[in-house]
Length: 177
Image (cartoon, rainbow, N blue to C red; front, side, top):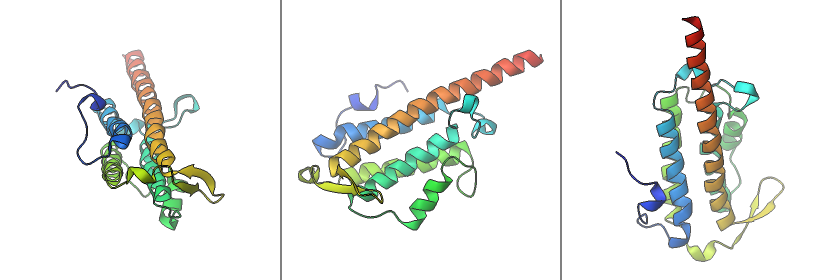
């Protein structure tokens, strides 16, 4: 179905007006990743053309960033499980191993993130929040915006990497014939 981008589909229910752009961007990330990877070969998931980050890394990382930014926005420290996830990002291992599994993980985390946005009191957006072990300064709004913009940055890289890999496979298969 040919629809406009998510930000042009109207406001999302229950999400405060100030957080609508972040919610729209996060949902667009999922849609763009899902559309780009419809026929993406699973054998290419962890390939790193020209040293670029793999498609698998981007899918892992986007979900992880959203989870970590929500943790900081809630004024909580990262858990051991979150540190383990961070250490595993970009590596095939114990977690989801297929394109479909990683997309499902991304969709689930994005739904959690958008649901969280609907619970945020806009009056708390300027509230200070320390980030990381060093306690670097941010705000609730800064963390939520960063979750959205960082996700968009990585989905853009994912789109390019996926196209390069698929084009390389097509070129390679044509050389063999």
